Image 1 (cartoon, rainbow, N blue to C red):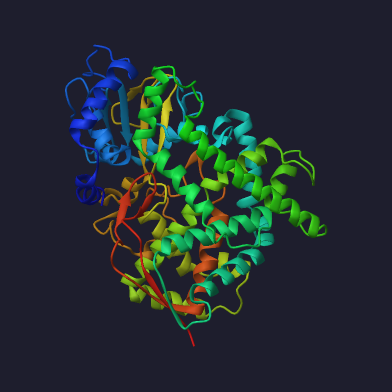
Image 2 (cartoon, rainbow, N blue to C red):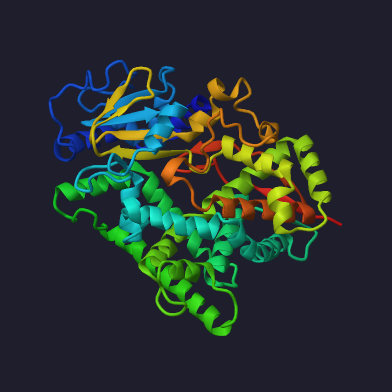
Length: 507
């Protein structure tokens, strides 16, 4: 699957090698503090991605983007590890499950998500920090673990999610009804946008008590801009260039980033106003989730939110809805291809007596298997990155590898999820039966991360996805247009373009 994605998309990347090489030379001279030290022997015995003299793979990086260049590393050798030199930076791809879990288990003092803000960095987290102001990426150690406990209690705890379930059903039903409105049929130009809009609406209702459907699209517009900046190499390159010339302070946003940040702040203030209106008009109602997070962090039941809650509120403008929307989109695409799977799912849906929390979470094994298989084939976050802070040994490699400070460690969930080495000859095919008995722990499945940085809200997200799909299939049949139904590898794993879907209201 990785090789196919590389072949389909690598020829479409811009700018040209000439332009990126010139830019790469400037990067090397002024930004990467290039030394004359040879790269040979950086990781003895580990396969290396070939690049250009002096520049290494800088031209490839700027031409193709980080995601595609680093995924190319996963095709090298069969040892589960490979590397590339990008100027004087060493990028290491770890795509063996045992080694990946070992890296994810490293403490923040050994492997962080950030690295040094004063030098050129490929970590998208620095871009997110500049756009989102002070945020949860800054926190490590005890504080990060304390925050995880608050999140898990709020989003991955059954009792908490039971309290949210009626609102999830209400928002899902309203959104599904809006697809066709009063008509018998309707054509949705891009189901990705519609599904993301449902997720953004659900988060708005869950966190702040927003009753509107966010039809102005401002949240999605800002979220897409954040994603574009975090996923492209060019904002990082421009920032590093400005940093070298002293045009910006380390960690401070550029003028264009400051404008995006101002828009984020405007949305945040608008959301808080909705929260205050909801609390004033519903004094006896249970706390909305953002208030609950603030109270759990030591805040009061009214008034300003705590720093922790405020950080999450800003982060949620970007995160949370893409994974829900992606799951819905890819499920509809695969159900269109596999009418036999759709028939079985419809039979399971028809067998339920009532749409309640217990039924959705515990009594629909085939739907569970479908969603897990979707997350195996199409993990919304296909990879993650770590920056080595302290020299350490990767002991699970066949020959122990020494990882040195400054090395960037790339972990490809997508490769491990779709490799025939782990999933057999049909690894690239959609087959929900793989998960009918639950998750096979002998096979790599990291759609929600692993270790101390795994997703703290995936159970709420899965609840939203399953509730929406049940409601949708109870009310409509559908037909997915085949164009643009192939995956596009970027920061997130998306479809190659808009996906048109026709919906037909059931009699």
